[in-house]
Image (cartoon, rainbow, N blue to C red; front, side, top):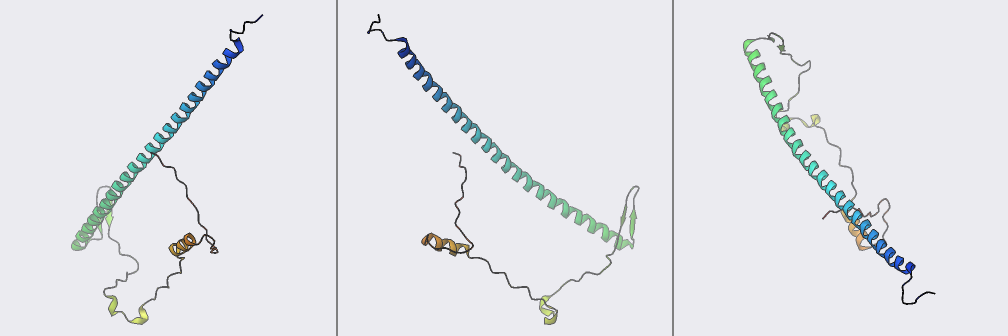
Amino acid sequence: MTNPAVIPFPARRTRVALRDARSAEREKEARTKNQIDRTARVLDRLEARQAGHDLQIAALERRKKSDAARQARIEKRALALMAAAGLKQLVGFRRTLERRESGVPKLIVDDESLIPANWMRQPKPAKAQPDKLGMKKALDEDPELAIPGVHLAQTVSLQRK
């Protein structure tokens, strides 16, 4: 005979099972939140690396510009020395610097206003471009309006806080 005052074993197991299920759900939620935090940290690091790369690129561009200017100054000085000495070549132990004239003379424009009209070119007129701002404003004001060849698109981005 069973005593009604005693809770049967299966009922206790149910409470334990519920507690375990809640615990498992909390653990799953914690794992998910940890994964979200790790993803945000990785994105932050990648964004910081890109900013660092931008700084490195800017520094390299400045160095490249400086090196090109220095090269032009040295070449100009060497050509001036060769012209003053009337030499076509400067011979070193291992290398030779040679002054060469281009095959075809270059045309330099001194004053455009003095050039006759028959020697002037007319640039092509600018190509017609769509008025994106006007179309967007019209579509925002009237959602039923249909403009062939265009549509509104909502972009989605990931924001980190």
